[in-house]
Image 1 (tube, chains in turn orange, red):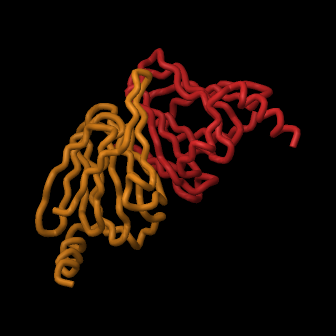
Image 2: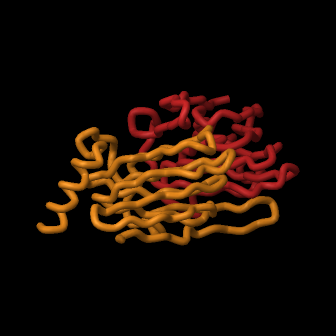
Image 3: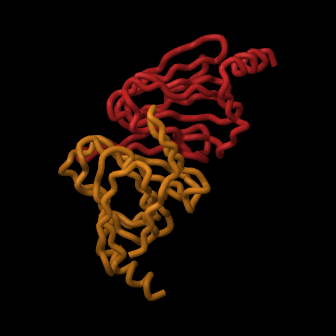
Length: 135
Length: 135
């Protein structure tokens, strides 16, 4: 399963810690920033893949689990540290689950929004992923 | 005092809210993302201005106060909503204070890091701000 955890550079300080995501620490330019908040702890989010957009997911507060599926294998990544970034590549189905109380998921995306870049149907994703592996 | 609060577009959902910062909702391209976390509630952060870099500050979790000073007047902005972004323009000294427990300050910056762009001495800031107003 193709994913990468990045150590985001941070400056630790008794007055509070500072983490910085800039071009030296992320493999793409940031075009869009979005975040999930006020998520009930029983909630389940995500359920899509991207054709071209890379995403970095960060548990900027609290924790959650990211379930990844590349069409052949699945894995789970537990995120609970603000200075760890999970890079989700293209053609990987992701779902977010097991949010802790007060958790916030920060997402940094490599592309501007385009509905055409989203795959929102899992069966369609599986057939596209199979074709993607073959090509 | 020159500052702007932006309503960040959000999609409210019982499974959690999603806020999106993209080119239509922010007056600059995002070059750098940084965030303050694990901030003790008595802490005081900030104490700098930028010559060219714009910053959007967001209370992505919890709350804090942003003290702004343009060299002539000061004001305080209380941030406590994840879908409100405070645009801090150039040549404005900012300090962050009164963090709530668990607060996280997300900052989106218009420029890559450059130490030359920072003004970290308040007296120097005041003299530069006075010259800036005259010019």
